Figure 1 (cartoon, rainbow, N blue to C red):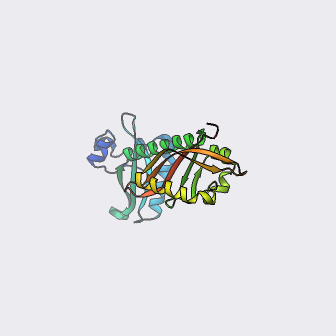
Figure 2 (figure 1 turned 45 degrees about the horizontal axis):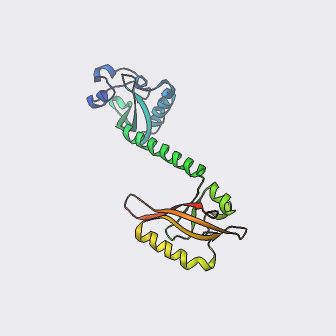
Figure 3 (figure 1 turned 60 degrees about the vertical axis):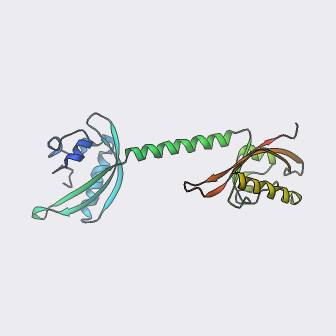
Length: 224
């Protein structure tokens, strides 16, 4: 009902939460939600009731009878039942595994961002043309003298015009082999001083295998 009383539930839905249909019928739907989400659930039911036949969808956690949690994507619509009374039809899809995968990806991204941020090596990425900088970490700022906001979206700043041909050869090798390991060359800092570098680079690809850019790690080997 718009007030949250369960009129009926299929066996699959009840089993999903560790109950029988008889356990749930006639009880408040709030039974299967965390108390912190009760008002949200009631607000969603009211919204559905105020907009009959309009389809709504949201994601929320439900509470299994055992106390465990599962994420569901709920699709709901209010319709007219017997005696023209409003009832809310709700279809629930278990997306717990999807949410776990999303959380794993989020954690992985955070870890990689921290590694890039804290790396003692200069880390930079360029787009598919090999020209435009898309990533420039703090070590790159310290190593070359340009701040990230000056570099992002711009051509690689440390490449002098007389090194263009050499750079093109490295880029061609990277495209051909997919990676570079310890390639050494000389470039120029912002103040005009030379810097000798060792580069480890790899092509970045999307799930279909298409190249989306290049990630490189640069070490200052000038002293050596």
